[in-house]
Length: 380
Image (tube, rainbow, N blue to C red; front, side, top):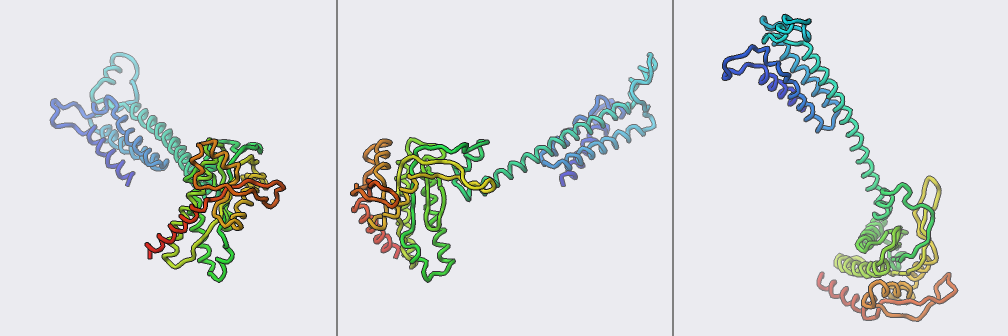
């Protein structure tokens, strides 16, 4: 279709330029239509074909234009009155008069036009081919980035894409760590088909991940029914602790809304435990050269995981270290820790010293239970 369009326009342009105009008296000899050269108008058709991003169509358009114009020039050159020559025929007044004769057709001008058209068509074809490669390469990069984003957090994808050495050597910096885990997941899976368990996990992961992204965190990994998120990696921010605590609250609110839907459909209500801690972590890549993984390691990570496990014993959905609460206060003030209650120090597994912790206030827990019951009754 594209080549047909080029052919039709080239034929129309040839006829327009070479066919005598009956409304233009006195008529000049048809040979004069070749002066000055009108072929540059045809190059617009070749230029138009570059929008197809196809080198073959560009070359095809160039050949069609050359052939169409050559046919028109040939028809004029074969006229009985035509005086055909190649450039200036010799020297002297007689040669100049012959060259300036209105019936003279210069084959050299046609050859120059054909050569110019071939050169420009070739250049445009190479440019289009290169552009095509760049577009394909960019498409592969975007596809790879989208595939990578399915496995690691989106802000890590941007970090990987923008820098030649995105992580560099291992380094230590402060970050907030969040662990969220489904309470009693093993018993929930008992007697349920694998498809139902997988659907439940996907729904849980999807909602928790969205909370992490909305709070500006990095989704570090999924481990079964557990979610690990970091705030302040790979680049620290002035509100990392606040964002981590806000993400925990978002997770609880999102789970409450989902539980209302689940109860309305006769499904079991889920409960989660969340652990938060703030402190120095080690950032870097670990693994084999053929399978590297970006990791956040250190005592801060281990403590956050232990605090999450401690939520079962304390019968609270949210346990935060005092270090994170103090960091929240330093970042935005006392109002941000509203709804949290300081608990007695506890000794977590793997640490010799007791850890000061905060838990979700009792009235907050009751409010969540009331909201769940009210929402379930409304849905019913």
